[in-house]
Image 1 (spheres, rainbow, N blue to C red):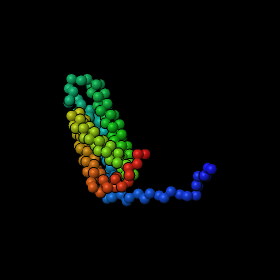
Image 2: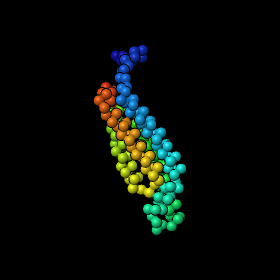
Image 3: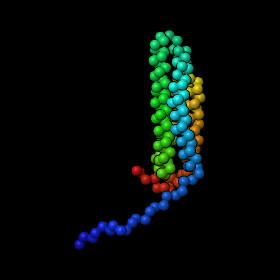
Image 4: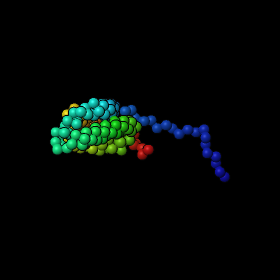
Length: 165
């Protein structure tokens, strides 16, 4: 005998734990990081002439055409990287709010990659403003990572069950 699938019974809803202040503040910092990355896009564009000058000083034997091409390449790649950084900040923030522990781990790895990128940019011929702004973004990321790994945040990730999807 086949029993029909019960349609009227509802599964009890699993109550999600409340988001602790440490995680809320980490998410706010990640949103600030996304905004800082968008500002960085604007700074790359606005300071293009300073980047060209820095590039010319670093490569004095290049022709004006090659200096312009090199500076434009740096500005373009920096702006694309900043847009990607903004998207990653937002994505990780949203996933952390959902209690996804993998997002906390991934965000920490992205922070490490961001630190390496900022160190690389210190060696590249871009404007001083861009270099300083990179440090600002790294400090925002550092604050978010510290808050993500505080005890209250860890408890939230553990209680949320950290579903895979």
